[in-house]
Image 1 (cartoon, rainbow, N blue to C red):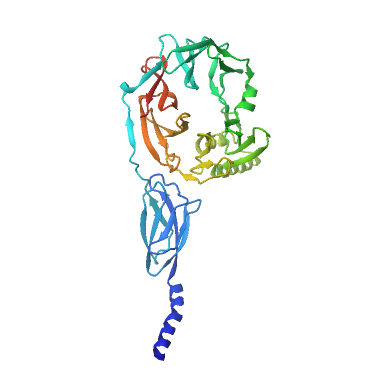
Image 2 (image 1 turned 180 degrees about the vertical axis):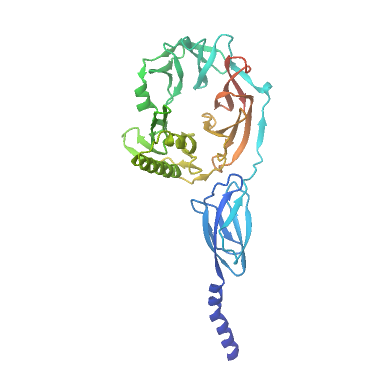
Length: 429
């Protein structure tokens, strides 16, 4: 009996030493198989154990294996799960490639016969349009010096029209829902009293840029404004080129009653900031050496850097930020406190044209993609970040695509040789 106890004690005493000596380090990096982009926040676990970790901001991870070999399980939303066997003999960095899931989308290739013409005229073209409640406001023109504002209902009946005093550029709906006609030096607010369509006295474009543009949304208590920064302005005289990129932004909300302002969130393109600083330092060294720097920074900006894109929307009185820099949908509660973030992957393709359309009536969200002149709208699930359905517009090179009341609206031409532009729509369900 005593001998058995001694043997058991010796075995237990040596067990921790044996386990510790069998541990081996695993260093790795997780990437997208198609794009080779690094994947962060990937869940990594050792099969059959509770041990695990996640990949960091550059896709790397470190974990301890045990024994001769282990099986690592990799998983992240939007990708196929993967298991990899790793032996203690591995000395190099383990590269793990994950494959994006092929969503079983209910893709709808809508035929041309399903398209309705909303406004078409043999004389007048449509320059731009906006939704005025359930009605539709249009800028129509023979030439741009002879433009007019037209209000129609959903049955295409004309409710009112008004001549525009100056050549218009576009329509703009501000954060509180007012619509303005934007001209080169001024803008005019549109007003409809149920009988007559009017243009209120003009404001300068400086007021537009300083007051109206920064305000992007409102809810029942607050206004939300945007301030972009990290702008790089280049004047390359040899090319007469001016480039400006904003690589960071702040969203601020101001209480409607107290006017007190608070920061909602700051978002930065960290990689872009590093590139910008490196270019500044390199340019300074060249100037100090008496070398020309004309065009260098312009080229870098045009090829490597993009304007930060992280739009904010009020969807059924709840604030959402589509943070395409960090691949997240960021929702906020009624007190403007962040809620559970939803990871997204759908935008990681060159076909994404950095445009998100919100159906103000239904609350549905659509991301826009373009391939060979064909526009595709993918309906985004706000809870999962995945795609619910996909819709392709059956015409090439349409523009001004918007969604309202389960209809996709767009401006198109009859054919490639006809300059006439008119407004059409198709139903998404």
